[in-house]
Image 1 (cartoon, rainbow, N blue to C red):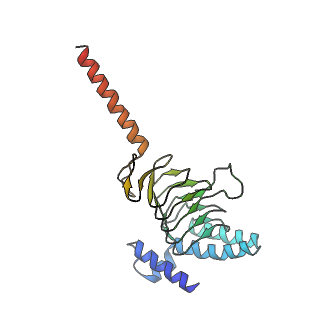
Image 2: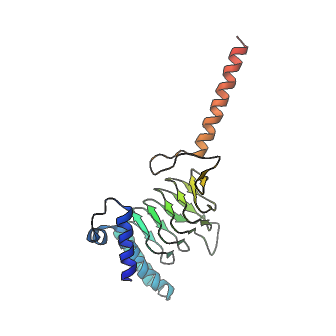
Image 3: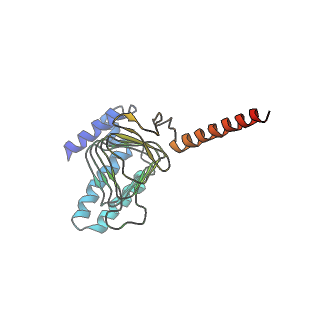
Amino acid sequence: MFKDLRETVEAYKARDPAARSTLEVLLLYPGIKAVRSHRRAHWCYTHGLKFLARLISQRSRHRTGIEIHPGAKIGRRLVIDHGMGIVIGETAEIGDDCLIYHGVTLGGTGKDVGKRHPTIGNNVLIGTGAKVLGPFKVGDNSRIAANSVVLSEIPPNSTAVGVPAKVVRIVGQKTDFAGEVDQVNVTDPVWQELAGLRKEVEELQRQLDIKNG
């Protein structure tokens, strides 16, 4: 337990430039508190203490603003940046070394039974406000851009952008929906397509104007 906590604190310090000390991360970072509470709640959940598990998770939700169902499976060194408004569903799974920003939902669509929530691979970044909905996998080393809505599987080593999300990079190579992606400057591939169509319409109009004199 102490090894896991130490690794997680070091992950926060490595990924968050505002993290100035181990003590600050341990005492003041809601993501650390939420995951520590979840470890206890998950143990209760898997040992049949479902009510106690929910009690622990709901108390943690009120303290941190981060809602993690006790049934969710979370790997090592998860970093939750800020955290307010995060929701992680019962059958969600998160791999090792992931980074999740505030406002993220790992949820279901309401159409599935059993496994209803996504499986997130190792070393995945999920940007602010992103929604990942359904029982599919987001591959290792992938990035989900801020405010994207992911409704289908994302391959490993790729970047997904937009509503609904489309893959814009695979193994570092740009696809047809390529755009510059970071937490601040994200180009929606649907907007790009509409902009291209608008240019074509404007060019056709220009040619008609010339033809009609």
